[in-house]
Amino acid sequence: MQIVTLTSDTGLQDYYVAAMKGAILNQMPQATIIDISHDIRPFDVANAAFQLRCCYQDFPKGTIHVIGVDSEPILEGEKISLPCIMSFKGQFFISNDNGFFGSFLDEEHPDELYQYTDIYQHREMVKFPTKNCLIPLAKKIADGNPLSSFATATNSYRRAFMQKPVIEHLTIRGNVIHIDGYGNLITNITKADFQRFGEGIPFTIKYLNKEYFIDVVHETYNQVTMGERVALFNSSDLLEIAINRGANGSTGGANKLFGMRQGDAVHVEFTPKGSKEDIKSLFE
Image (cartoon, rainbow, N blue to C red; front, side, top):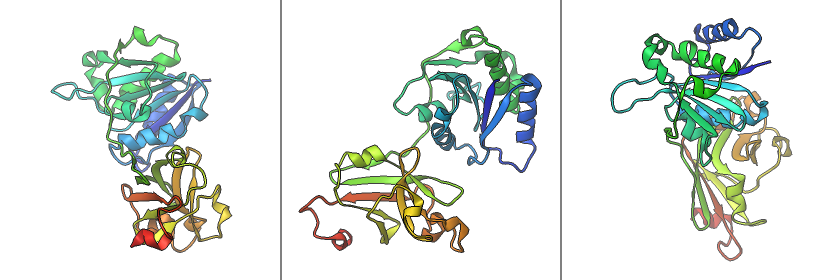
């Protein structure tokens, strides 16, 4: 059984997803198709990388991930970008070389990376490239063809801009990098970032303005009452700010209640003994 995942920025309003799935089933009738997301903001390859980074480890080895975000190749000029296939930890990732690979890998490296240079001889693939180019490449992989038999090895790939937290003496300055369907604010601050400051050190998470702060990280949403703000580390060990069951209430999720958007700042200030008198002094 061949698993093929789809990630795209096409949305669900139009026929595009159906056409991509039809192409997969036409070429690989026994394939199991899994949708990662089709609600990626148009051309936001960094968010596509984030979505896949959070879930690829849940898939078995041999899974093929097709990423149809900003997928049109650029075949001429100074900024050429070709379709590429990456082998990484036993799985395959097929995308235009538009920054996805560098953002997905972060500080890691691909096991193998190949460019599909034959697209110059098959320019018809440039139209609707996810369906007409990336999915046929998935078919070649599913048939067991070595990557070297249809693509050219490379060690060069682009990296889309991704905000990184800035860690200073007693402060982590991060940002909201994703707002999920519940309105939860997912930041680029990791559990490891927190742990650099030691165990049991008091802290305050500040966001938007001084009226909003949290000084406890809980393990689950339900450790606070319904409608109460909560901070926790999610399954990807990223700091998340939420409203417990806020998506079911009249105020909506944390993004609506706090007026927060992707890219907004989230700061964590640590207060070891003797550094601050109390929480109020943080805002003076």
